[in-house]
Image (cartoon, helix red, strand yellow):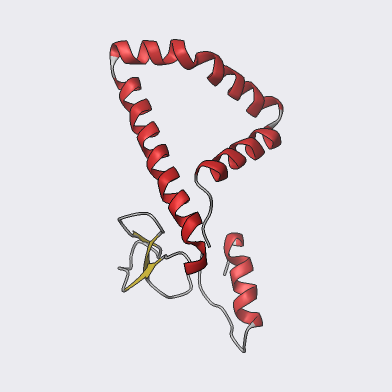
Length: 136
């Protein structure tokens, strides 16, 4: 494999048995579509010239049911917020009010990303996990 993102997976596969990985850009010769937990539609996870022949459907472990419920609730809240922001930006009056109401926060976030990108990333990741925790 030539894609560094798949290097961890490649090493793990080869360590579990007498396997040798061949492929390109993270593709291991298995044309699959993946439906992540909480999503309705799967996406192809193979080169565009191939059609997925298998479906990988993500489900949480039974012991993670509470976390899964929090994840789905957070996903719905974030989806609703994104829809609201998109609609506010689309209208003439709404976009003006949106910028007036959130401009200072956007400016502060932009300054933080410029001056301390690592801190900005940690804060963003922490907020995301608090609102929509990862599920095993």
